[in-house]
Length: 288
Image (cartoon, rainbow, N blue to C red; front, side):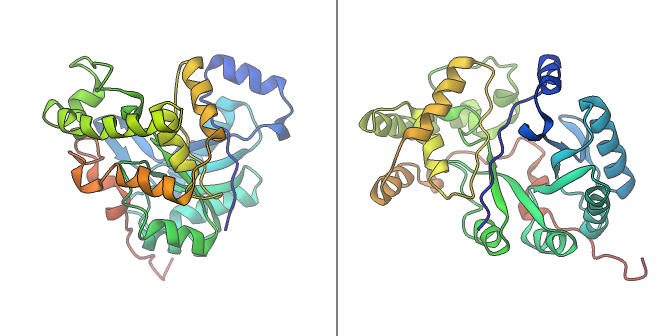
């Protein structure tokens, strides 16, 4: 079973300046490639040429000699995964990348990719109200020794009260494009938040701390990546590390969020076909 430790900070201008002041070996840099364009007009690309050009561009922008963990952000379903990972393998051999990660790949894609070069991390959505990976992807990762990096562990802010305690403008991307936050669903989902809030009071923590601690308790190979722009929320997230749950606690928390009661899918409008369920790739041409 892999145990990964990946601190996550988005690097703006100040972050890049700080990176230059720190010993390089003390910092782990993770970044991604694979999505061209901007939402909702995005295009997934995984050709070897694109992989290399993105890596070279990131190295230049970051002003570093290597990237610690380089993810394929989404799977290009038109390019054999052997070709994409084959180019990533070359980048590892050249010292430009240390470890390879995948985001939202299917089980078949994971196995085929791992056969070309060991995959270190799987980035995938996992939270109290998104648990579709538990039956197939989680066991597969543990079979192959791949660390799991859950994104949106706070349900895109839902367990912090977004859309429930904190009203969102109609122009918000979540309100406009995410089914779970649309008017017809957010009211139904409020009962889920209320149950989580009640359990948080029982454990003397906040709802986001409870939700994040639940993800952290899924295993030593699980490193969630909650995002925030506020120091107070960062401090609150760090506080989740101190929570200790028993098996009975975890069961009670899980049962408070019945998946069949969650209103709306986890996918932004028009992006469901980019999820792991559909992320197979064509077979590699044996002549190549």
